[in-house]
Image (tube, rainbow, N blue to C red; front, side, top):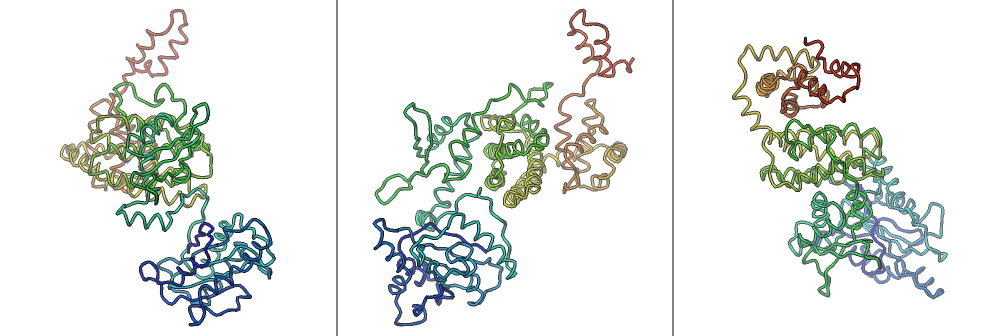
Length: 563
């Protein structure tokens, strides 16, 4: 059940005209009052032919007019409007049931507190099977204004109890981090102009797409302007940026002027202070996990950064920062991925926007490495090779699972659901990206004897998942990867253990495919030469440092056992 309190209005008669009218698409049927304040005492215009909407409006507005006649400052924001709608799969409620629901909602909101005979005047109008509209005038019978602060939270609590009592679909509790729903005016305008999105939704997508390209808020606004978006910065006397608003080209008011939306009205996490906190952090000198054996492309650097994601999830402020940066990386990947993966990755990025924000404050400095990886991908001119892309998408799948689990542990219901929706799209893209890689590897699969030997390695390294791995249709391709790695000096048994430690396999739908992506990334560098490493360290030790330090360095690499 949805109970959406609308912004305060001033025209009681106008709202009644809509509630009792045919609707914008003739969807209103049999409008009538199902409940109202105790002293309603007048006929229902939907039932009595002689009753008029003007009479009903005057009756509801009477306390407002009395107050305005006694005080110099008039009340104009007195119309409280709350539509209440059941889910499509819910049963149709009777008028009696809707009357009880309306009474419970106005009591929870503070419109008509229980046992208070001097509350506000209100009615509930039903003109469809699945919803009612509550209209109230927010001046009490004693001339005071009702206490409506946090009424949305109280109504939400009442709504959840109503869902339980009536056996209706139960919606998740809000946490004040959701974006504003489009207004009916915005939706009708988009429909009239043949826009697929309302202006605020359109702007949100463009701003999120621009974030990975910017190193600070000034760069972000410049990037938005270069995209053709109207930007109106707000600056102090010193020229410092204090705020901003953005406008969609062609979104004009009745006077033909550009309409601008403040960042915070576009999305809660797109205010200037929050964007500054995300963008203007000090970048580290290098990726701490980056391999130096081979030149690392931005795609492999992103994989390395994601490998360390789980290490930053213990502290809540760090975890929130990493999840926010993860969204930027998904967005950057969507922008640079091949065309056949673009739709799924765009959908993943849009879905993850809700998972990026919660009530927990983010320590953005903790996620600089991941954010820099997103920025490097956004700035690269070259696309990824098939293997790198498949590995990155598989790693993004695992990172999203980690994010979903963290949100679930913190009881972030909406964010958990958003992460799960993201996971659906990422898995589809990852499967599509890995399919040609698996096909190519399968054509080079080792002979039967070599596969039996490698199967023994699988059973020894990951005994709990060996049967599923060997039954996976991608096992021949994994055998090829292990054989290639062994030819490069790696030990298949060790690679399997490392890959399983990096990504648990219990939840993996196709464990062999998961291991292919992980092991290809791990084994892309030659296996370490312990003798050469010991020799290098020996030559770099400072003269006179003592034989003990030299011996410790050699023993650390196991060289003494090789002689």
